[in-house]
Image (cartoon, rainbow, N blue to C red):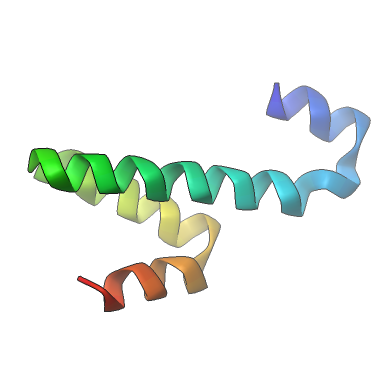
Length: 62
């Protein structure tokens, strides 16, 4: 759906990126509780690419 939205409403790209970053952050919380290190590393990398400042804030709390 995100790709279709960007073709129809390119002005929403920042909002979609923020939504994806928040989804990744929520997934990270669950993965941390489960101790799934490999998945945590992959999600952190994706988060860093989408929202570096949110990634930095998340890592400060770790």
